[in-house]
Length: 257
Ligand SMILES: [Zn+2]
Image 1: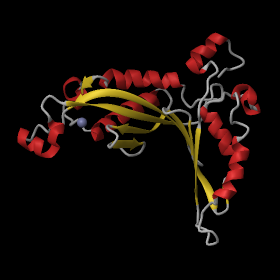
Image 2 (image 1 turned 60 degrees about the horizontal axis):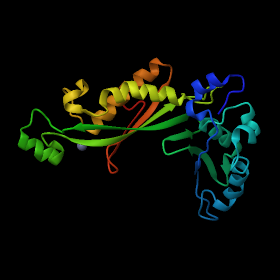
Image 3 (image 1 turned 135 degrees about the horizontal axis):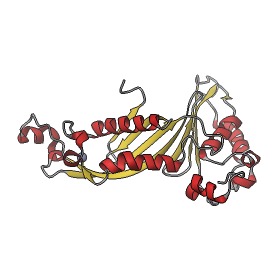
Image 4 (image 1 turned 135 degrees about the vertical axis):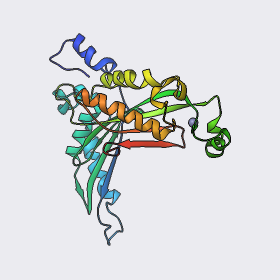
């Protein structure tokens, strides 16, 4: 990833470790909706789709995109710009189906999503924290009745997975909706500094009068990140919080109004 008008120092400062040549095993996910055709019982027949996908993907597959694809002679090959190229290349109408959503997974942590009216990028973070589910107006016995072992007096911990989704258009110079290092620094300052390796009930004023369930933690994280990103000129679209592999919580923009 390199901006041709910038020196190595500015490129390195902007793109960090993405500056040097490196590869990804991208996964593309596209979704169509529409009426089910009475002829074949399908919205889109995969046989119709396969050659269209081949045409769109072949120029990208196995390439060093910076030099191997004409689109990226002038644009940075970020997941945002690759997803946009695919959105422009793929047909939006196939049989009775209409293309409604395109997702490009760049790595386990990074995903871009395009729909007809929005574009979003998501990055995933992990932090560890302890909590005790405890309602102060209830007795210890009542708390155990309601929260079971999650009300253990000394607390217990989780490795939370946090997915942060920012909406917007990619910057013309960098190709990112938000520079990865910028979002990392915001999550570092606003989330890790507050909650990582903390006991939410004991160390975090946010939970002095709030039970630190993952519902409340997701709400608090959304409010903190939304305000900070807005202040920096970005739009938080959603946060997703995995407390365990079984339990997932999310807050989307508009949910808390
Ligand atoms: Zn827990």
